[in-house]
Length: 97
Image (tube, rainbow, N blue to C red; front, side, top):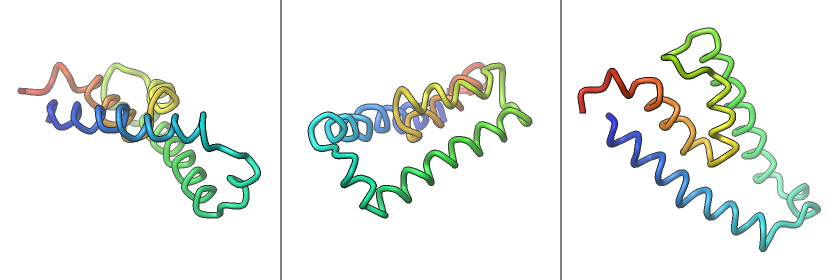
């Protein structure tokens, strides 16, 4: 499970986040973003899913690392990076691999 968490975290940080940062710095126009309903829907969905998962982990923690680190990690990378890395941080001492 540790290797799978690292693979997904790496994909999220290196691939998804790189694509996002390229778009953000070289192609982003706020007015076109507001007109793009798919982009808005995906942005709202990821934002609310991050919020929902953070609230869940606040009341049902999976380890010693606090719930707000999921939000911080998702701001550093993507949710694909943050969620498996947050899981690994909390379960790293319990994993057999």
